[in-house]
Length: 396
Figure: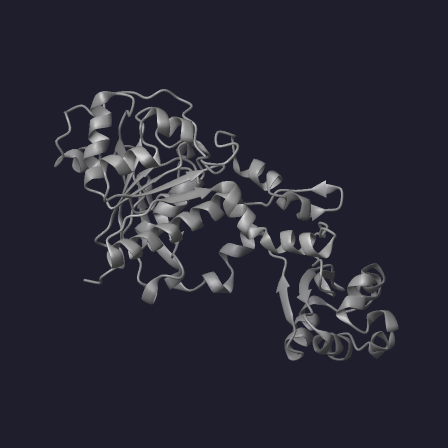
């Protein structure tokens, strides 16, 4: 039997939506046993985001492969005692309930560590718990706006959020790596350290490049669609047959090859406005006009051949439906057959796992499917899953 990196680790996830479930699913992919705590009244609200995967939510299927679902009412003493029993068996506790909700349940980091000193606690929140606004609501799009991401996304005078929940995913990624680091530290030294992950802090880390550019350069980058604020030419170009390709010319050597080998336009090399990247960026409007005329004379297939022969970077502007049939995803190893309550579906194989080893038999759980199994060996009173929990609990 193949040994997985985390197959001796138990993780408890008191989680909703995206950020914490993403972190725990990545841990499950590495073999960890992940026990997902859900309330009886509908469970994780991501279960109801849509019903397109055979009647199931695409978000929930994405984030919850390989987990066990346990229903507990944590405001009821029976459910609360059951959770304490589960935590006593675990190595890691991951949550993205709001700081207020955690404090009310006595599940904030300090309280949990006091009761379970050997447990690594990872708390994902909107803003830093010890910062000036720990209770501020922090949904993904709000954090994108607050962290300045929308100011550099889209087009001038038309800020836009990204098409995926990038703040949640950033936080989930940091929670995952933070837990792995804490496990390594515990195993090496015996010391157990908590992990705190604010969504705002996670996205601010990803915004460091434009932040430093603005702090030290004196001017902020502007949203430029597919273009690049400090490199030109870089972005989408139109071809003779109405298609579009992305190109990226990184230096003056590549600029020369673009002019001579791709566009057959040696006159562009003589234009004093375009001699260096800095000049090309300064005269971007003139450059874009000249290149648009040149690219519109070349059909897409011919342009791809020329770019390849000139060893220049390019990409197609694919639609989402193109991604499913992308050659990189045409390899059988990129997909897993994943059982769900409504049948087997295809899900993407995780990347960046040691030796390519992943938990290949993980299923998406039905709500409360594992309550009895998980609680069976605990000293939890019967009926722990039969109480209800109010709607509307806050999550980060």
